[in-house]
Length: 377
Image (cartoon, rainbow, N blue to C red; front, side, top):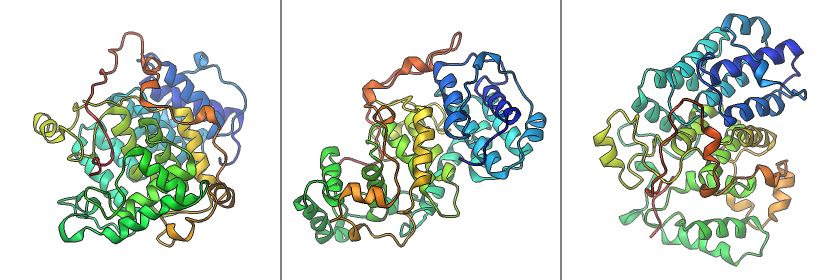
């Protein structure tokens, strides 16, 4: 959290959030919208006083700029508004246009704002490609190939298979219970992941830091867990990168809106691309509406508190595998995870929280699996 807001500033932030969530007062709020606004005020902006959502009114970007002067607060506000614009699980141009307008007025110039603008223009393919680029930019050791962005993520085939590397990870299963290494091993085994070095395993430079953050943060690999670990990662990053564009928004597109930017990794993707080249309305998956905004804000703040950046390029997984997990969490200042704010399994997502009166319900969930990596062999 930044510096405390005055009552007029708090009201301005709340009205800006209401304006975006309601598409300028034209769309009813869902239960998820209401909870997102009140929890953002509390967690992101440090406002302890309860806000009566029913008293909020539509505001303009001009009025907003007169109240919010801090650059840090402006950036946090636009980040929150971007999440709110996507919270009801569909791409709604009026909400996105309001975010772009407020970001411009507040002089918040960031890659994620460009993505919101492009999304408002229905340029979803550009958005997906740019988010992959931004994600790769945060991962030391993973090269960027604009023509084949995912080639570097799946390197282990033919002569590139690395049995020695895979066996080194297998050995983690012999470590004592409670160690970081054993927790990492159990995380892979329980999720059916293949260790780096094996066929269809993800490249070590991406997978090991990412899955280390699952273990360290305590967030699962359900749709909601992936959303929360993305926010935790965004808060943790010390790089000069845009955490919204590289981690948070792409995960929202995949696990909340069903716009799967991981095209080619999941069953049916190529047929879906052919049927809808814009990538706009390709939702067909077993996860949708996984985002709980209150949990997301908390995950972001927990990541901000973490003193170690595992994507720094200097952090070594192997230096810590024999350490007790709880000792590492304490040393790296990771706040404890409140069980009520942990990720829920996919079948416990409260889809009814996103229902809005007079608005079509979100698409149904199907049996097509959506995942961030192919099945291990």
